[in-house]
Length: 109
Image (tube, rainbow, N blue to C red; front, side, top):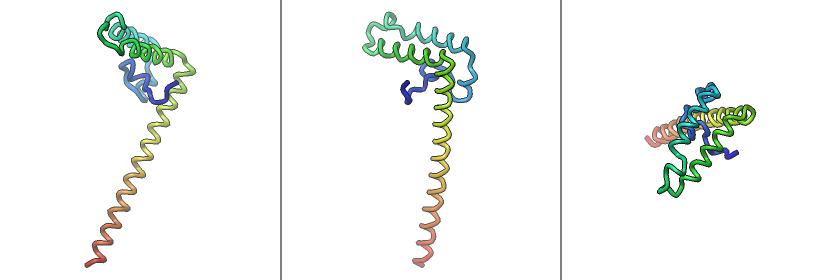
């Protein structure tokens, strides 16, 4: 499983919490719609048509398999938590830099 691919986005579905709550029927419907759009026979001039269709098919297989989908949902949750922690750390770092610069300016005068 490619860890950088958001399988929900590939199918044109909402990701994150919303994606985790989608039914199998909603996922299948989205797959069928995207498959009609991306099928290589419908896009003879697109050199990436086959690769895009295979990516779509792989994403659908991950989301269709309950075990794989749960693992993928957990991966997305961990990514969101990591981003949240990084944003908090960056904000704290910015405050520390600002405070340091302020103290340096005050010590000059």
